[in-house]
Image (tube, rainbow, N blue to C red; front, side, top):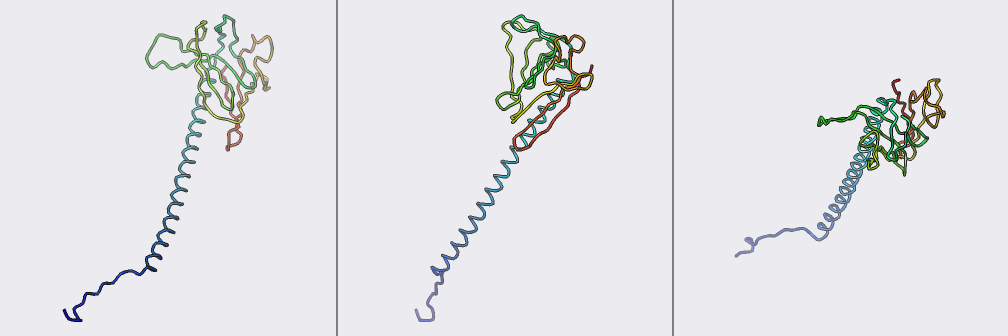
Amino acid sequence: MGRNNRIKISGFTLLEILVALFIFTILSLLLAGGLHSVIQAQSITSQSAERLHQLQVTLLLMSRDIEQAINRPIIVSSGRNEKAFIGTYRMFSFTHVGLANPENIVRSSMQHTQYRFDQGALWRTTWPVVDQAPQSRAHSRQLLAATHVSFQYLDKQGHFYNHWPKEVDSIREPLPKAIRIYFKLPSWGEMSQLYVIPQ
């Protein structure tokens, strides 16, 4: 072959390859940081949505139960009679109607329920029957993680008490007029709800 027919091969220099690798590394770091931020934001959003769902379910359950409270004393598993409504600063138990019966089983629509704040959470406990046998077993469910939950009870004169019954003789007023509930939730602060009991 002659000199004019030689094939010329062109390529990248080592410096050009190093510059391209440097740019690619910077872009990869930026993209990885952005992806991490998106994943972290999505995780925080999911956690907040789950906490909001738990709060909504809790408020709905409490509203449904409390607003259907009735004057129905019970017999506990030890055989002792218990008043229709007993409340303290951290717990209250009562009987209410409205127990769901999707399978149409022959049973009462009444249920004995307790709400209590214990070990950094609000719990709901129910019993399978209103008048309990010695072998009756309660079912407890954690509703909501909280820093603080407390209860107060309103009488007919418009005064709040930290316990119920407010007197030893509670025949004339077996149920409070309303229940005020204070919540203190992590990162969300304080809130309160007032549930009226129809008389």
